[in-house]
Length: 120
Image (cartoon, rainbow, N blue to C red; front, side):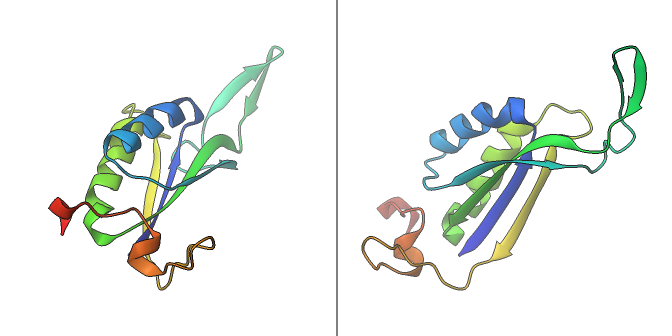
């Protein structure tokens, strides 16, 4: 099992959600964050004054998946978020030791994106 964290542009969040849905990736968290990376030197004009922007608005997706869903999750995030410009985002993949579904008590693989029989 893995925890996939995707940080993308806010205007691409709906495209990412659509791609994840098409890839049958279910169960995610989404939050608005601020950050900076490759677009650190971005300059904007505000009320006639040039201002160097320190932080950009981003959207963070957190998705716990079984190993069988890892590649399709990464692919969906990339396809939905890509503009080809600096600041498209990053994807981080971390090992996930344990998952518990609070409602049912299911653990680990039973508590993340369900596998279809074709994926077994």
